[in-house]
Amino acid sequence: MTNITFTEKTPNLLIVATGNPGKLQEMQAYLADINLQLQLKPQHLEIEETGETFLANARLKASEVAKATGEWAIADDSGLAVEALDGRPGIYSARYAPTVAEQIERVLTELGDNPHRRAKFVCAITIARPDGTIALEAEGTCHGEILHSPRGNAGFGYDPIFYLPRENKTFAEMPPESKHSFSHRGQAFQILLPQMKKLWYD
Image (cartoon, rainbow, N blue to C red; front, side, top):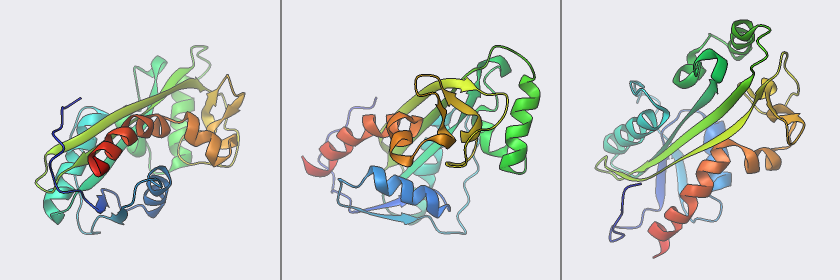
């Protein structure tokens, strides 16, 4: 992790490097204890995700949005990595098929009857200064298994097939507060929040 000297102006606004209001609301919930405003990136601003890792893509998105807006920016990049599929869909999770249903179907088809179902969700989060340099970053993971068919109606993405044996539930069967405590994004924010509070309040 980069060592930060906390002498910079405390930001009260973070531009979220996404056009998805749902992701903004989810981040706002994690950041409820920090007094700042979150705002979606400009709609016209599209960042090509050319990184080869989740962290590289999160850095790229945060940096480019920060430089384009002249504000502090936060970005995350996340996805599903299935061991038996050599880590696929990985950084291509959101682009693995045209729709979420087709993405899930593709993963299940590629796994077939393979008994080796171990997988993990990964989330990388970065915060960039207005000049594009990275101030803070964290990565969280959640290990589980891929079911043979979807279960549950909550959540989004691959949640209906991502199963946590210790909870005997998929992410799509969990209430939001439970998912937040176990999820890859929740783990990443648990690492990031103490750093953010130090940056904001020290």
